[in-house]
View 1 (cartoon, protein in one colour):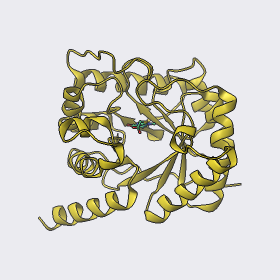
View 2: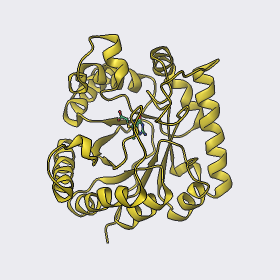
View 3: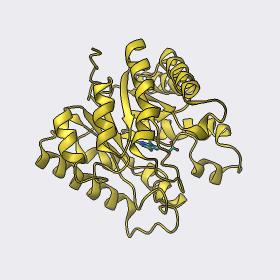
View 4: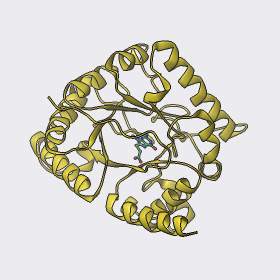
Length: 277
Ligand code: 8Y7
């Protein structure tokens, strides 16, 4: 059986989480085995590039995305988790809202539950997370993927995100999930306007008061195109790296990215300059 490694929780160690999507829309040709093989190959490349964590998701949570049923989600992610858990040293993360999927993913070798609903999607989520004993990433979102970008409203986005995550940490404690197992995330793009995303990035240091590692997921997101030129997601590497470096300066230590090699290099250079200061 694969033994997953916990990532260090010290704020100065950087953890790179590489994104492995296993959804038919990300691989338009071929059947199910082809999807799994391509996702495994992609995960191996990201591991080679320096990813510490591989985040495997079988249900798109992009704005407007529809839900996927449990059996379909399981059939997408489980072969990929098994393939990557046995072939890499990476911590395997399951990106899901569903406790049933998290449970099966952990049995297949995952050691982190990345939940964009912060364990609120099902009444069973908190209990299952407690029982599984794995690390958990609690992400803030306003609304659901179907509707979240319709008209997000906050009085004070930074304060509301901090309060929400603080409440979720308390809920976790009540369910028997200790703070040492938690990672917090402002949820860039999840029910946020451009101004909300920028306020969260500019004040990301305020999440440090939660005493958990802060994860930033800005890679290739739409706000980058809104600030520069409208174009395909693949053309957002420069903006993605800018967000990582800004986030690092504001205390984030985990970065969920598509482009692991370029991000690793940017962090190495920025880190060396900061150390020579
Ligand atoms: C995030 C995420 C996505 C994020 C965490 C995309 C699954 C949208 N974004 N998980 N997932 N944080 N923790 O564009 O920001 O990658 S999906």
